[in-house]
Length: 215
Length: 193
Image (cartoon, rainbow over all chains, first blue to last red; front, side, top):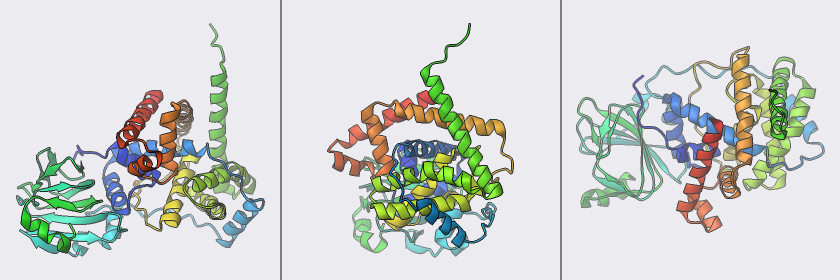
Protein backbone atom coordinates (compact mmCIF):
# COMPACT_ATOMS: atom_id res chain seq x y z
CA UNK A 1 0.00 0.00 0.00
CA UNK A 2 1.21 3.51 -0.74
CA UNK A 3 2.10 5.78 2.15
CA UNK A 4 -0.87 7.90 3.25
CA UNK A 5 0.22 11.46 4.04
CA UNK A 6 -3.05 13.32 4.54
CA UNK A 7 -5.19 12.05 7.41
CA UNK A 8 -8.50 12.75 9.13
CA UNK A 9 -8.64 15.61 11.65
CA UNK A 10 -9.34 15.00 15.36
CA UNK A 11 -12.64 16.85 14.97
CA UNK A 12 -13.83 14.48 12.22
CA UNK A 13 -12.68 11.33 14.02
CA UNK A 14 -14.38 12.44 17.22
CA UNK A 15 -17.63 13.29 15.43
CA UNK A 16 -17.53 9.94 13.60
CA UNK A 17 -16.99 8.15 16.92
CA UNK A 18 -19.75 10.17 18.60
CA UNK A 19 -22.07 9.42 15.67
CA UNK A 20 -22.96 13.04 14.88
CA UNK A 21 -21.79 13.28 11.25
CA UNK A 22 -24.14 13.21 8.25
CA UNK A 23 -24.25 9.87 6.44
CA UNK A 24 -22.20 11.11 3.43
CA UNK A 25 -19.36 12.11 5.79
CA UNK A 26 -19.59 8.83 7.71
CA UNK A 27 -19.16 7.01 4.40
CA UNK A 28 -16.07 9.03 3.49
CA UNK A 29 -14.52 8.62 6.95
CA UNK A 30 -15.25 4.86 6.99
CA UNK A 31 -13.71 4.49 3.52
CA UNK A 32 -10.54 6.35 4.55
CA UNK A 33 -10.20 4.29 7.75
CA UNK A 34 -10.54 1.11 5.70
CA UNK A 35 -7.34 2.21 3.92
CA UNK A 36 -5.49 3.84 6.83
CA UNK A 37 -4.25 1.91 9.86
CA UNK A 38 -3.11 5.09 11.59
CA UNK A 39 -6.59 6.66 11.57
CA UNK A 40 -8.11 3.30 12.56
CA UNK A 41 -5.95 3.31 15.68
CA UNK A 42 -6.84 6.94 16.43
CA UNK A 43 -10.53 6.08 16.05
CA UNK A 44 -10.01 3.31 18.63
CA UNK A 45 -8.91 5.99 21.11
CA UNK A 46 -11.97 8.15 20.41
CA UNK A 47 -14.27 5.13 20.85
CA UNK A 48 -12.53 4.51 24.19
CA UNK A 49 -13.49 8.05 25.26
CA UNK A 50 -17.11 7.13 24.48
CA UNK A 51 -16.73 3.95 26.52
CA UNK A 52 -15.33 5.87 29.50
CA UNK A 53 -18.15 8.45 29.31
CA UNK A 54 -20.72 5.65 29.31
CA UNK A 55 -19.76 5.03 32.94
CA UNK A 56 -21.27 8.37 33.98
CA UNK A 57 -24.89 8.18 32.88
CA UNK A 58 -26.89 5.41 34.55
CA UNK A 59 -30.72 5.37 34.53
CA UNK A 60 -32.42 2.37 36.24
CA UNK A 61 -33.84 -0.29 33.91
CA UNK A 62 -37.41 -1.59 34.19
CA UNK A 63 -37.85 -4.30 36.85
CA UNK A 64 -38.34 -7.02 34.27
CA UNK A 65 -35.62 -5.59 31.98
CA UNK A 66 -33.25 -8.52 32.36
CA UNK A 67 -36.01 -11.13 31.92
CA UNK A 68 -37.30 -9.31 28.82
CA UNK A 69 -33.78 -9.24 27.37
CA UNK A 70 -33.26 -12.97 28.02
CA UNK A 71 -36.58 -13.58 26.24
CA UNK A 72 -35.31 -11.51 23.27
CA UNK A 73 -32.14 -13.60 23.18
CA UNK A 74 -34.07 -16.89 23.30
CA UNK A 75 -36.48 -15.70 20.61
CA UNK A 76 -33.42 -15.05 18.42
CA UNK A 77 -32.71 -18.79 18.49
CA UNK A 78 -29.30 -20.46 18.46
CA UNK A 79 -26.47 -17.91 18.36
CA UNK A 80 -24.57 -18.24 15.13
CA UNK A 81 -20.85 -17.71 15.26
CA UNK A 82 -20.66 -15.82 12.03
CA UNK A 83 -17.39 -14.09 11.32
CA UNK A 84 -17.29 -10.95 9.21
CA UNK A 85 -16.67 -11.64 5.53
CA UNK A 86 -13.00 -11.78 4.58
CA UNK A 87 -11.33 -8.55 3.51
CA UNK A 88 -12.32 -7.68 -0.02
CA UNK A 89 -9.92 -8.07 -2.89
CA UNK A 90 -11.61 -5.52 -5.16
CA UNK A 91 -10.38 -2.04 -6.02
CA UNK A 92 -12.66 -0.14 -3.66
CA UNK A 93 -13.02 -0.54 0.13
CA UNK A 94 -16.09 -2.46 1.36
CA UNK A 95 -18.14 0.46 2.79
CA UNK A 96 -17.98 2.28 -0.55
CA UNK A 97 -18.86 -0.84 -2.55
CA UNK A 98 -21.98 -1.19 -0.40
CA UNK A 99 -23.17 2.22 -1.63
CA UNK A 100 -22.24 1.62 -5.28
CA UNK A 101 -23.72 -1.86 -5.28
CA UNK A 102 -20.49 -3.29 -6.68
CA UNK A 103 -16.91 -2.39 -7.48
CA UNK A 104 -15.55 0.35 -9.75
CA UNK A 105 -17.08 -1.15 -12.93
CA UNK A 106 -20.58 -0.86 -11.41
CA UNK A 107 -20.41 2.95 -11.03
CA UNK A 108 -23.00 4.78 -13.17
CA UNK A 109 -20.99 7.79 -14.29
CA UNK A 110 -22.61 10.94 -15.68
CA UNK A 111 -20.51 13.40 -17.66
CA UNK A 112 -20.43 16.94 -16.23
CA UNK A 113 -18.20 18.55 -18.87
CA UNK A 114 -14.54 18.77 -19.80
CA UNK A 115 -14.19 15.02 -19.48
CA UNK A 116 -15.06 15.13 -15.78
CA UNK A 117 -17.70 12.59 -14.67
CA UNK A 118 -19.58 12.11 -11.42
CA UNK A 119 -21.86 9.63 -9.69
CA UNK A 120 -23.95 10.72 -6.70
CA UNK A 121 -24.31 8.04 -4.02
CA UNK A 122 -27.55 7.43 -2.11
CA UNK A 123 -27.18 8.99 1.35
CA UNK A 124 -29.40 11.07 3.63
CA UNK A 125 -30.02 14.61 2.38
CA UNK A 126 -28.06 16.55 5.03
CA UNK A 127 -24.89 16.10 2.95
CA UNK A 128 -23.94 14.71 -0.46
CA UNK A 129 -21.42 12.02 -1.36
CA UNK A 130 -20.24 11.72 -4.96
CA UNK A 131 -17.60 9.88 -6.90
CA UNK A 132 -15.61 12.13 -9.24
CA UNK A 133 -13.68 10.97 -12.27
CA UNK A 134 -11.09 13.50 -13.45
CA UNK A 135 -9.07 12.65 -16.59
CA UNK A 136 -5.29 12.85 -16.15
CA UNK A 137 -4.18 16.48 -16.24
CA UNK A 138 -7.74 17.89 -16.24
CA UNK A 139 -9.02 20.41 -13.70
CA UNK A 140 -12.17 20.54 -11.59
CA UNK A 141 -13.49 24.12 -11.96
CA UNK A 142 -12.13 26.58 -9.41
CA UNK A 143 -14.47 26.55 -6.43
CA UNK A 144 -14.86 27.73 -2.87
CA UNK A 145 -16.89 26.09 -0.10
CA UNK A 146 -19.74 27.17 2.10
CA UNK A 147 -19.46 24.23 4.43
CA UNK A 148 -16.96 21.41 4.71
CA UNK A 149 -15.76 19.30 1.79
CA UNK A 150 -13.91 16.02 2.23
CA UNK A 151 -12.08 14.62 -0.79
CA UNK A 152 -10.62 11.13 -0.59
CA UNK A 153 -8.41 9.88 -3.43
CA UNK A 154 -9.18 6.32 -4.53
CA UNK A 155 -7.03 6.15 -7.66
CA UNK A 156 -4.49 8.44 -9.32
CA UNK A 157 -3.71 11.75 -7.61
CA UNK A 158 -4.66 15.40 -7.62
CA UNK A 159 -2.82 18.59 -6.82
CA UNK A 160 -4.15 21.89 -5.63
CA UNK A 161 -2.59 25.05 -4.17
CA UNK A 162 -1.88 23.28 -0.88
CA UNK A 163 -0.39 19.88 -1.70
CA UNK A 164 -0.44 16.66 -3.74
CA UNK A 165 -2.98 14.02 -2.73
CA UNK A 166 -2.40 10.38 -3.66
CA UNK A 167 -4.36 7.15 -3.10
CA UNK A 168 -5.84 7.00 0.41
CA UNK A 169 -5.10 10.69 1.14
CA UNK A 170 -7.99 12.82 2.36
CA UNK A 171 -8.29 16.58 1.99
CA UNK A 172 -10.46 18.47 4.48
CA UNK A 173 -11.49 21.83 2.98
CA UNK A 174 -13.60 24.52 4.64
CA UNK A 175 -15.06 27.98 4.05
CA UNK A 176 -11.72 29.74 3.96
CA UNK A 177 -10.50 27.67 1.06
CA UNK A 178 -10.84 28.43 -2.65
CA UNK A 179 -9.08 25.83 -4.69
CA UNK A 180 -8.77 24.31 -8.12
CA UNK A 181 -7.85 20.64 -7.92
CA UNK A 182 -6.00 19.29 -10.97
CA UNK A 183 -5.61 15.59 -11.64
CA UNK A 184 -2.00 14.45 -11.76
CA UNK A 185 -0.74 13.88 -15.29
CA UNK A 186 0.20 10.24 -14.68
CA UNK A 187 -3.26 8.66 -14.47
CA UNK A 188 -6.98 9.46 -14.37
CA UNK A 189 -8.03 10.40 -10.86
CA UNK A 190 -11.03 8.93 -9.01
CA UNK A 191 -12.12 10.56 -5.75
CA UNK A 192 -14.90 10.26 -3.23
CA UNK A 193 -16.08 13.75 -2.24
CA UNK A 194 -18.56 14.67 0.51
CA UNK A 195 -20.02 18.14 0.98
CA UNK A 196 -22.50 19.51 3.50
CA UNK A 197 -23.31 22.63 1.44
CA UNK A 198 -23.32 23.35 -2.30
CA UNK A 199 -19.96 24.39 -3.72
CA UNK A 200 -19.50 27.93 -5.04
CA UNK A 201 -17.91 28.08 -8.44
CA UNK A 202 -16.00 31.21 -9.31
CA UNK A 203 -16.68 31.28 -13.05
CA UNK A 204 -20.19 32.22 -14.13
CA UNK A 205 -21.01 29.20 -16.26
CA UNK A 206 -20.45 26.49 -13.68
CA UNK A 207 -22.52 28.48 -11.17
CA UNK A 208 -25.47 28.55 -13.54
CA UNK A 209 -25.07 24.85 -14.07
CA UNK A 210 -24.99 24.05 -10.34
CA UNK A 211 -28.63 23.07 -9.81
CA UNK A 212 -28.46 20.52 -12.63
CA UNK A 213 -25.22 18.97 -11.53
CA UNK A 214 -25.99 19.06 -7.84
CA UNK A 215 -22.40 20.00 -7.12
CA UNK B 1 12.02 1.91 50.25
CA UNK B 2 8.46 0.71 50.04
CA UNK B 3 6.00 2.65 47.92
CA UNK B 4 3.14 4.11 49.89
CA UNK B 5 -0.22 2.93 48.66
CA UNK B 6 -2.31 6.02 47.93
CA UNK B 7 -6.06 6.28 47.60
CA UNK B 8 -5.77 6.79 43.83
CA UNK B 9 -3.76 3.59 43.56
CA UNK B 10 -6.51 1.67 45.34
CA UNK B 11 -9.23 3.23 43.18
CA UNK B 12 -7.22 2.49 40.07
CA UNK B 13 -6.65 -1.15 41.02
CA UNK B 14 -10.38 -1.54 41.70
CA UNK B 15 -11.42 -0.07 38.35
CA UNK B 16 -8.84 -2.20 36.62
CA UNK B 17 -10.03 -5.35 38.36
CA UNK B 18 -13.57 -4.42 37.31
CA UNK B 19 -12.48 -4.13 33.66
CA UNK B 20 -10.89 -7.56 33.83
CA UNK B 21 -14.04 -9.00 35.45
CA UNK B 22 -16.14 -7.73 32.56
CA UNK B 23 -13.72 -9.35 30.11
CA UNK B 24 -14.05 -12.64 32.01
CA UNK B 25 -17.87 -12.36 31.87
CA UNK B 26 -17.68 -11.92 28.09
CA UNK B 27 -15.61 -15.11 27.79
CA UNK B 28 -18.17 -17.02 29.92
CA UNK B 29 -21.02 -15.82 27.73
CA UNK B 30 -19.13 -16.70 24.55
CA UNK B 31 -17.90 -20.12 25.66
CA UNK B 32 -20.69 -21.36 27.95
CA UNK B 33 -23.77 -19.19 27.33
CA UNK B 34 -23.43 -18.26 31.01
CA UNK B 35 -26.59 -16.39 32.10
CA UNK B 36 -25.22 -15.38 35.50
CA UNK B 37 -22.27 -13.66 33.80
CA UNK B 38 -24.73 -11.94 31.47
CA UNK B 39 -26.85 -10.79 34.43
CA UNK B 40 -23.77 -9.14 35.97
CA UNK B 41 -22.94 -7.29 32.76
CA UNK B 42 -26.59 -6.35 32.36
CA UNK B 43 -26.94 -4.85 35.83
CA UNK B 44 -23.88 -2.69 35.29
CA UNK B 45 -24.17 -1.69 31.63
CA UNK B 46 -27.87 -1.73 30.69
CA UNK B 47 -28.69 1.30 32.92
CA UNK B 48 -25.70 3.14 31.43
CA UNK B 49 -26.82 2.43 27.87
CA UNK B 50 -30.32 3.60 28.82
CA UNK B 51 -28.90 6.80 30.32
CA UNK B 52 -26.80 7.40 27.20
CA UNK B 53 -29.86 7.01 24.94
CA UNK B 54 -32.00 9.31 27.08
CA UNK B 55 -29.34 12.00 27.01
CA UNK B 56 -29.36 11.61 23.22
CA UNK B 57 -33.06 12.51 23.14
CA UNK B 58 -34.86 9.14 23.44
CA UNK B 59 -37.81 8.96 25.87
CA UNK B 60 -37.65 6.44 28.72
CA UNK B 61 -39.71 3.74 26.98
CA UNK B 62 -37.69 3.86 23.75
CA UNK B 63 -34.40 4.00 25.68
CA UNK B 64 -35.43 0.92 27.69
CA UNK B 65 -36.33 -0.99 24.52
CA UNK B 66 -33.13 -0.06 22.69
CA UNK B 67 -30.97 -0.77 25.78
CA UNK B 68 -32.46 -4.29 25.96
CA UNK B 69 -31.77 -4.72 22.27
CA UNK B 70 -28.15 -3.54 22.69
CA UNK B 71 -27.62 -6.05 25.52
CA UNK B 72 -29.14 -8.86 23.43
CA UNK B 73 -26.69 -7.92 20.65
CA UNK B 74 -23.84 -8.23 23.17
CA UNK B 75 -24.92 -11.85 23.82
CA UNK B 76 -25.32 -12.68 20.12
CA UNK B 77 -22.03 -11.09 19.06
CA UNK B 78 -19.95 -12.13 22.07
CA UNK B 79 -17.62 -14.09 19.77
CA UNK B 80 -16.66 -10.83 18.02
CA UNK B 81 -15.52 -9.04 21.18
CA UNK B 82 -11.73 -8.68 21.22
CA UNK B 83 -10.34 -7.69 24.66
CA UNK B 84 -6.96 -6.87 23.08
CA UNK B 85 -8.64 -4.11 21.06
CA UNK B 86 -11.34 -2.63 23.31
CA UNK B 87 -12.69 -2.62 26.85
CA UNK B 88 -16.18 -4.05 27.35
CA UNK B 89 -17.45 -0.50 28.01
CA UNK B 90 -15.98 0.75 24.72
CA UNK B 91 -17.42 -2.16 22.77
CA UNK B 92 -20.89 -1.60 24.28
CA UNK B 93 -20.60 2.13 23.53
CA UNK B 94 -20.04 1.37 19.82
CA UNK B 95 -23.05 -0.99 19.68
CA UNK B 96 -25.26 1.57 21.47
CA UNK B 97 -24.08 4.42 19.25
CA UNK B 98 -24.85 2.47 16.08
CA UNK B 99 -28.33 1.56 17.34
CA UNK B 100 -28.91 5.21 18.22
CA UNK B 101 -28.12 6.23 14.62
CA UNK B 102 -30.44 3.48 13.30
CA UNK B 103 -33.34 4.27 15.58
CA UNK B 104 -33.18 8.00 16.27
CA UNK B 105 -31.78 9.22 12.97
CA UNK B 106 -33.04 6.45 10.71
CA UNK B 107 -29.77 6.65 8.78
CA UNK B 108 -27.24 4.00 7.86
CA UNK B 109 -23.85 4.12 9.43
CA UNK B 110 -21.11 2.88 7.12
CA UNK B 111 -18.41 1.06 9.11
CA UNK B 112 -14.77 0.62 8.11
CA UNK B 113 -13.88 -2.66 6.47
CA UNK B 114 -12.93 -5.31 9.02
CA UNK B 115 -9.29 -6.05 9.55
CA UNK B 116 -8.15 -9.28 7.90
CA UNK B 117 -7.56 -10.75 11.35
CA UNK B 118 -10.56 -11.19 13.63
CA UNK B 119 -10.36 -11.75 17.39
CA UNK B 120 -7.97 -14.59 18.15
CA UNK B 121 -9.47 -17.64 19.89
CA UNK B 122 -7.09 -16.89 22.78
CA UNK B 123 -6.16 -13.20 22.69
CA UNK B 124 -2.70 -12.37 23.95
CA UNK B 125 -2.84 -11.91 27.75
CA UNK B 126 -0.31 -9.08 27.80
CA UNK B 127 -2.12 -7.15 25.04
CA UNK B 128 -5.43 -7.62 26.83
CA UNK B 129 -4.05 -6.41 30.16
CA UNK B 130 -2.34 -3.41 28.59
CA UNK B 131 -5.52 -2.39 26.76
CA UNK B 132 -7.70 -2.80 29.85
CA UNK B 133 -5.25 -0.77 31.95
CA UNK B 134 -5.18 2.00 29.37
CA UNK B 135 -8.97 2.15 29.36
CA UNK B 136 -8.99 2.55 33.11
CA UNK B 137 -6.33 5.28 32.89
CA UNK B 138 -8.41 7.11 30.28
CA UNK B 139 -11.48 6.98 32.53
CA UNK B 140 -9.51 8.64 35.34
CA UNK B 141 -8.06 11.26 33.00
CA UNK B 142 -11.57 12.14 31.77
CA UNK B 143 -12.86 12.46 35.33
CA UNK B 144 -10.12 14.96 36.19
CA UNK B 145 -10.64 17.24 33.16
CA UNK B 146 -11.64 20.81 34.04
CA UNK B 147 -15.42 20.98 34.29
CA UNK B 148 -15.85 23.31 31.28
CA UNK B 149 -13.91 20.96 29.02
CA UNK B 150 -15.52 17.77 30.28
CA UNK B 151 -19.04 19.11 29.79
CA UNK B 152 -18.33 19.83 26.12
CA UNK B 153 -16.82 16.41 25.48
CA UNK B 154 -19.90 14.82 27.08
CA UNK B 155 -22.22 16.93 24.94
CA UNK B 156 -20.31 15.98 21.80
CA UNK B 157 -20.68 12.26 22.56
CA UNK B 158 -24.07 12.12 24.22
CA UNK B 159 -26.29 14.64 22.59
CA UNK B 160 -25.88 13.82 18.89
CA UNK B 161 -25.05 17.49 18.22
CA UNK B 162 -22.41 18.94 15.91
CA UNK B 163 -20.08 21.62 17.28
CA UNK B 164 -22.19 24.34 15.61
CA UNK B 165 -25.35 22.92 17.18
CA UNK B 166 -23.63 22.88 20.58
CA UNK B 167 -22.73 26.53 19.95
CA UNK B 168 -26.39 27.37 19.32
CA UNK B 169 -27.54 25.43 22.37
CA UNK B 170 -24.99 26.79 24.84
CA UNK B 171 -24.62 30.30 23.37
CA UNK B 172 -20.83 29.81 23.42
CA UNK B 173 -18.89 30.99 20.37
CA UNK B 174 -17.94 28.14 18.03
CA UNK B 175 -14.24 29.02 18.41
CA UNK B 176 -14.46 28.62 22.19
CA UNK B 177 -16.08 25.21 21.85
CA UNK B 178 -13.46 24.02 19.38
CA UNK B 179 -10.56 25.27 21.50
CA UNK B 180 -11.96 23.75 24.72
CA UNK B 181 -12.38 20.38 23.03
CA UNK B 182 -8.87 20.64 21.61
CA UNK B 183 -7.47 21.45 25.07
CA UNK B 184 -9.37 18.49 26.54
CA UNK B 185 -7.92 16.13 23.93
CA UNK B 186 -4.41 17.49 24.58
CA UNK B 187 -4.84 16.81 28.29
CA UNK B 188 -6.11 13.28 27.66
CA UNK B 189 -3.16 12.58 25.36
CA UNK B 190 -0.76 13.91 27.96
CA UNK B 191 -2.32 11.72 30.68
CA UNK B 192 -2.02 8.63 28.45
CA UNK B 193 1.73 9.08 27.87
